Every structure is written in C-alpha cells, then in structure tokens.
Length: 147
Image (cartoon, rainbow, N blue to C red; front, side, top):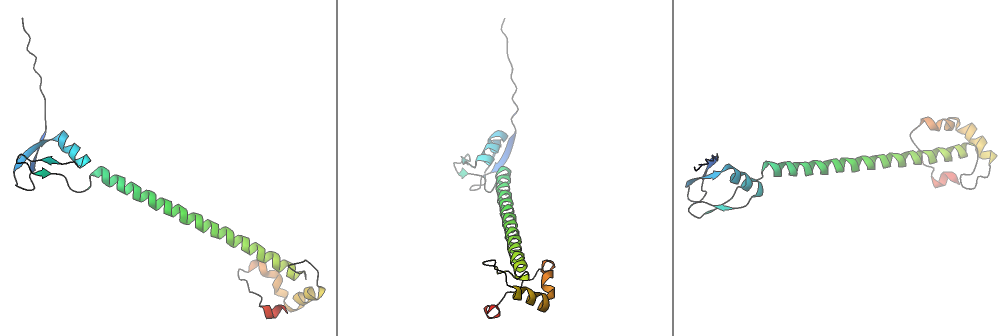
C-alpha cells in the first residue's frame, strides 16, 4: 500500500510594475517585505534593476528616535547650564552680601581692620545700606569714591 502526502502552501503575491519597462509582475509578500526593509535590488522579468525608494517605517522610527534623543540631550545640557548659572549667581550674591556686611560694620573687606569712621559714616549717611539683603541690585563702587 502506498500513501500520498499532499501539502498546501499559501503564497501572497503582490503586483509590481517595472519602473523602466512598465511590465507588471508579482513578488511574494515575504520577498517584498525583505526588500522594503533591507533596500536591496532585484530584477524585473525583463532584467531591469528595481529597488524601493525612500525610508521604511522602521528607518523612519529609528531616525525620529535619534532626533528625539538629540533633543532630550540638548534640553538636559541647557538645563544643566541654567542650573550652573543660577548657582554662580547665588554664590556671587553671597559674596556681595558678605562684603556689604563688612563695610556696614566699618571693616576693611581685604584685611578686616576696623575703621570706626566708616562705620559711623555708613550709619549716618547711608542708613538704608543695611537693608541690602532685600535688594537685588548691586551698585558698583567707583575707584574715585574709595579714595
């Protein structure tokens, strides 16, 4: 007794037109998907080279993900720079406050020597100078004002 074995295969064929001669021919769906993703060439039945043009969906997703990563990195870098600038501003404000406090007490900001005349002058002539912590503006001292 002999047995006959039947096998059924379903292949999906997609019609393609040759870009050179216009001949319509078929590609099985698996082959078509591979050429879409790898961009390699194939030939029409008349021997003309064929390939898919443009980005695949996968390539587009990868390109957009890279673009998003670059944008996120730039955002992080800008935020880090802004944070560093804010830290420098606060440190500078602290130094200015420290110097103003010394001057208001009549102390030399360099050597710390006390000058009662400066303390009295600041208290009498510039009584609002002690309120400097509430002010954000710093008025630079000109060299001629120091002498």
